[in-house]
Image (cartoon, rainbow, N blue to C red; front, top):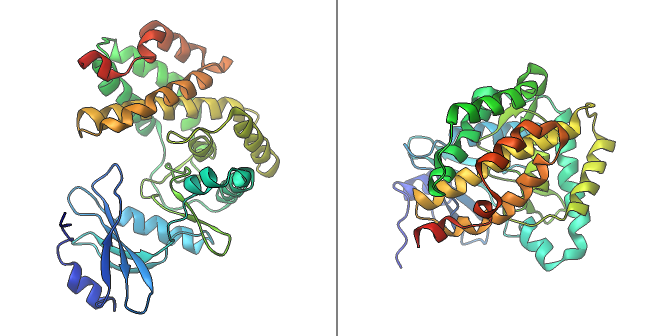
Length: 327
């Protein structure tokens, strides 16, 4: 099959001194972005991000990448950019992703997760990037996705205003300014961490970063939507984080609350990817997401949120696939 190359890519690469390079397409993700490996005749490689406007805007990625590199984190170096076409040439971190490496070398799991958690400890101590705040409006837009996409797909009618009010009350403590002082990458998990040849871990897919709570990215990696993380490993990594970072007395409550918020959001997003975008494979992740959400809702501080879920979405519905209802 012929791969459609981004418009203007040849002159872009020529201007960046990569005019002789071969262009190799790579697998895409859940967005409109596409990636290509650029391989020069010398053997040097780089990555080309195609983030075509108006669907994508590469400026947030560039902003966060430059912040991370400036703060001593391993984000890709920016080699060239064309904002009008949405083309960005970046450092190539290779193909050794955390997820596949651990699947092939499970004996490395603890060490790799410890390194990833240490990155979050460093982020919590670093000056926050200039970013929008992870505020009540952002949290509630995300929790609304479950009501907007998942509930209709499962044939469930609900009082959306009540749903929002319950989340607004639960999340209110996290919307104070003191919890908007850490750079939150927001999609920090085993498929977005690259293992580099020098032993460091490379960060990718951080264009949606916000200034928010330090526990959010911890939830993201320890309650991974795409990979099972054992409760034992999660507990060990939480203990490690508590030892290395300055955590508040309410840290465990905040972790569970952010886990519930994030997992409810992802259930909505994965349903949307099926209904709107035809990406049925994301439905296979829903059982994992429900298991994680129920674990978070078991925290005593989330009783009102848990009661809403218990009243609205019975266990037999949670255990069902939306495909069972449309078959």
